[in-house]
Length: 134
Picture (tube, rainbow, N blue to C red):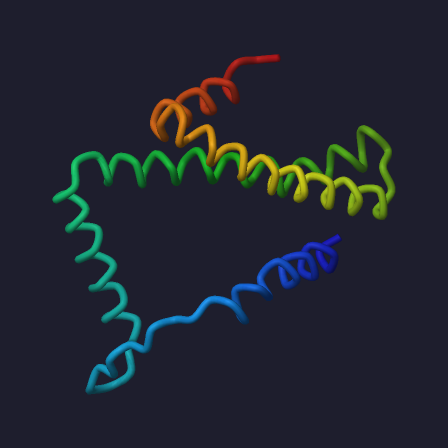
């Protein structure tokens, strides 16, 4: 299963390698970046988020709901499909391929919906839908 996901990830990433051109960056003189320098930059960036209303709250909130969703999808979908539904490994791979294709379509449609109703409203609708029991 993990090999299939890795191959799919590679295939979908290949256009980025060949079609996206990155602007060259200026070379910073001095020693190579190290852990403490990276940590300092991270703390500075976090402190700068206070300049923008709501960004800190958004980032913290996004961390919590995306972590929960990623855990559910990655951890429990496979276990549920195998243990409860009785899927074989190849059927789980097929399910993941269909889920990835569905998420691509959903990403496009979600982007159109964000344009129509706004990102905040759509995010709230989505989160409330996830919380409401079926």
